[in-house]
Length: 240
Image (cartoon, rainbow, N blue to C red):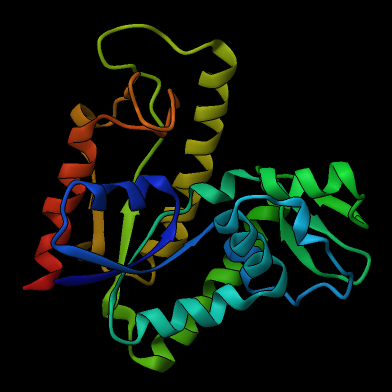
């Protein structure tokens, strides 16, 4: 059994539904790198407003910053695949200085019971990019200190504007995908100065195509099955 930890979202996690030779030992989702490496807020939160146990755990990990320790524990003796689609979300700064990822689940809490908010850090802003660089540098320095850099695999994906079998996304979806891809280009440039190109999974255009029958619905980042199979094929080389 090949042990793997996942930081990111369904683009990385869903591949392991195609191959039962992998054991996913940890899955950290819905927390920005910026949030992960910021101090926890002093404000209290009512997690009972999130009904899904998985979503509740993810919100708690984002708020309390336990995701960071969990990530490094996983890295100590496992391959870790990372994608950065979560950076498409805004961040919230609380009055105490804590930074949170503005996920759908956090927004749900905010709608029912207002979260104290000093300001919103917009997803595509220059400030967000600078904060990402600072947080990534902290992550990489810790990975170097622990001697686990070689365990990191970067899932270098981009959103697509193509739908398998024809059909087109709405213009607003295309514009959003283009903005996310511009942000991802920036993120990959930051990471490439530290992580060897051999530790990146890069995809041919032929598999970067949306699946209209995807289990999570049609989206620019819900890909055809060939995308996940390509990912698994490339991942296998890290276990030799």
